[in-house]
Amino acid sequence: MVAEEVRKLADQSRQATGQISAEIKEIQQNTEDAVKLMGAGIAESEKGVEAVAQNEEMFKNIIADILGLNGEIQRITSVVQELSESNSAAQSSIDELSEISVKTLKATLYIEAAAEAQFSDINEIAYSSREVLALAENMRATAQQLSVSGTRNALTLPASDREDIIKQLQAASLK
Image (cartoon, rainbow, N blue to C red; front, side):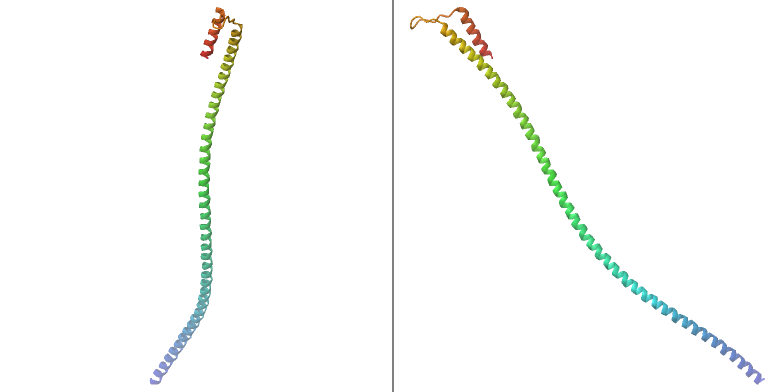
């Protein structure tokens, strides 16, 4: 019985040893798999680190490009603002020139109207002068026709001629 018990115990020990050996092999296999996965994870991590480094470099380049573009945009904005100010100044000058042109036109029209009025007045004066000249010539001719007797005698003029002269003088003074 003791031998049988020892055999049973040896059998159980063998089975337990087999089980432990199988479990150790499984643990070893799992450990190897874990090491392989860790190796692959490390390799992937290294690739990720490289990718991050590349992305970091790309982001640095993008930021540099953005800063460069920002500078260009500021220069363009400055140029546009200068153009806008120049345009405003030009518009102001155009408005001033327009105002001056309107004033000049008004003054020209006023001068034209005054010149026309003066021309009309000159024509009237010329007409009146011709009438006065004609009247003066008539008076001279009439005076030559008068006969003078003695040094202090009165001029004799027919009554009809006197009335014509008076009418002519009145007509000239009305104009």
